[in-house]
Image (cartoon, rainbow, N blue to C red; front, side):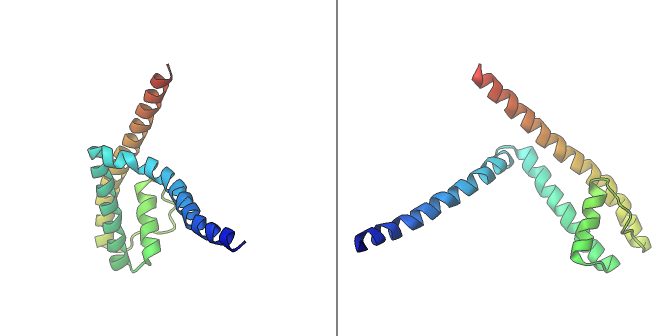
Amino acid sequence: EVACVKVWRLREPLYLCARYFDMIRPVKIFLTPFFNDAELAILSVTLIILISGGTVFYHWEEGWSWLDSLYFCSMTMTTVGYGDFSPTTDMSKIFTIGYAVSSIGLFIAFASKIAAIHIRETLRQRQKRK
C-alpha cells in the first residue's frame, strides 16, 4: 500500500506537466504565425508600442486612470468610440487626431494580415486533405 502511494506521488508531477503542456498547445498554435511571419511581428510590435504610448499620453495629459486611458485608446483604434471619454485639452485633441489616423490604419493592416494568414492556412489544410 505504501509503495502504491509512492508511485502515485511520482505520477502526479508528470500528470501536472502533461496537463500544463496540453494547456500551452493552443497558445503555441496561436503564436506560431507571429514568429514565422516578419510582417505580422512588425505590425504586432508597432501596435503594442502605439497603444502603450497612447495610454501613457492620456494618463499624463488628461489625468485618466491607466485603465481608462487604455480603454480610450482601444475604442479609438477600433473606431467604436462610445463617447464616454473625450479629450479636453488642446494638446490631447491634436494628439488624438494623429493617434486616430495612425492607429486605425495600423489596426486594419493587422486585422487584414491575421485574416490572410487564416485563409492561407485553411486553404493549405484543404489541399492536404485532397
